[in-house]
Image (cartoon, rainbow, N blue to C red; front, side, top):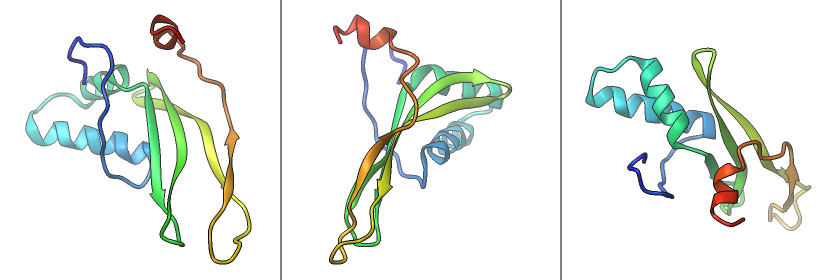
Length: 116
């Protein structure tokens, strides 16, 4: 992902944003022997946002969380939840809900450099 070009988009399959980061670590370890700390630093510098989409009980898919990758500290990749889907009581077997902002985006420099 850190190819020197601005912007990139990719998909992966996991049960949570944190699980996706661990799966990325595992994929790199399957291909070469690099210290885990080096892999984690590269992942933390390459990924800014993780968007978690899940399938719910009613078989619908919804964006469940938007998570910011803060960096590599204390031997782990640190994240924070920016937005989270909060489920309302079911209506006619269909799941509804609303977005709840949990934290503000910390790393805004890339957005500003892109004109946002």
